[in-house]
Structures are given as C-alpha cells and as structure tokens.
Image (cartoon, rainbow, N blue to C red; front, side, top):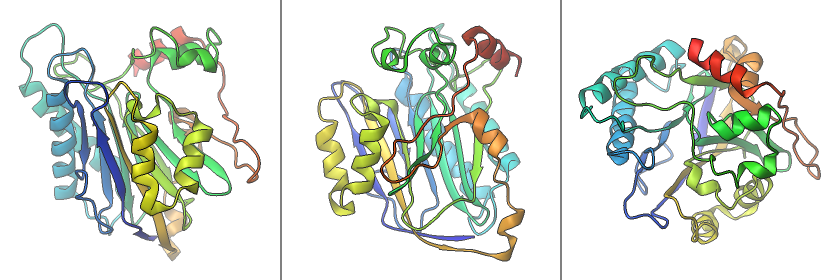
Length: 300
C-alpha cells in the first residue's frame, strides 16, 4: 500500500494559557506532502516542566523513528516500542527529583507501506474520518472520566463538565516504576478522501464528535485551518492538531498480509459502526467497572 496525501493542515494555539505545553512533529508550517510521521504531545498541565516533557518526547521519538524506519517499509510495533523505550530513558535523565513529575501525553499517526499505524498514551485524541460515512475510529482516552463513563457512573454529557475531567490514568513521566504501555492500532481500511486527525484535548473543549466531523470533512481544505482557529478561539487550554487527508491509495498484492487488528482496535479505541451518510455513528462501548479497568492497567 502506497499513500499520497494532500498538504497537511496544522495548528498550534496558546488558548488562555501563559505558556505552550503542546508539542508537534512536524512543526506548524513545516509539514509537507512527503511526510508520513505525525506526532502531537500535550505536557501535563499543573506539573513542573510539562513543556519540557512534551518537547523532549515529541522531538526525540520522531528522531528515533526516522533513524530506524523507512516509510517505504511497514512500521513494526517492536520498532515503535523500542523507539519509545529510548525516549523514556532520555526522559528519565531529565528528572529533577521533584515529587510533582513533569509528564506528557502522546499521539502518533504513521503512514507506511503496511497501512496506517495509530498509537497513543493519555487523553490526546486520534480520529479517522470518512466524508459521507462518519468517524471510523476514535482513540480511547486514558482518563478517569472515561473509565467512570464506561462503568455507568456518569453519562457522556457529564464527562465534559466533571471536575475530574483532566485526570489521566496513563502518561509518559520520568522514573516510573511501571512504564506506560503504548496502545497501538493498525488499519488498512484507507480510501482517498479519508481524514486522519491527531490533536491535544484542548481542541475538543467546545466540539462534539459530530461537530468536529462536520467541520473537518465539509470545510474546504484551504479554509480549514482558519476555521478551526476561529472555532477554538475561546478555548482555555493550549490546542494543537494535525489534519491529514489521503489523496491516493495504491493497493499492492502484499496488503492482505498486513495487520488490521479488529480485536486490538476494540480494546485500544472506540470503534464506530460504519453509518449511512445521514446517520450518526454509534460508539461500541462495553460498560466495565472503572476499578476493573484501572487494576487491569496496573497489572499490564
């Protein structure tokens, strides 16, 4: 499978914050149609040096991957995990001994000969959208409110107003006793016109999934960046995003040999039913106790 993409669309806004704790690769204005690796990290708000953690993880992970992987070849999960281990070693070296550890979320989209790899830690988000169809994939937040929602203790509407909405259950931090696992999802279900979006949670403050889908897929590409900046102008948090639209997909005889893990996807993400153009995509969440999910995460 070979990809051609349109010019990537990126934004990075300060919001009502004094400093920028989000980081991205490539930088705003630097992405080209030749790029195949995209990363967004969100430094943990309220923690010391959140911007240091996000910048280090974002830049060093990109450097490690591009040194050991060629997009003309499939991206093996082991290569991705080894690269992240190297980055975590460097993050450990920047530990200042404070009890309040710096930290960051991570989202990554890589387009390669084997398909598209999507990986995340934390509550920054990845979407795969198909115009006229709906959201095909939305990454599963590693957050307390999402666990509470899955357990039935709060409603989807209450998630956005909860006082605990910023509490995440997985993040990259230095010198952790157990390093967090990277949730990795693969797809070969890619068509021309599809959008992949990775963003920090600050982008989503005033967006429902339906409104985000409509904005991204129905706004002319040359206007999309300014439209998103206008729609998020009042957002309090930093907000950063890459939006990638597929132009051409060239199928190859080896595509059937590549992973397209439905089971993994259902664990690592909210996988949405393919819907008719007029229908609203339906999330396939299975209720589970928040405590059971939390203890599962601790064990693994």
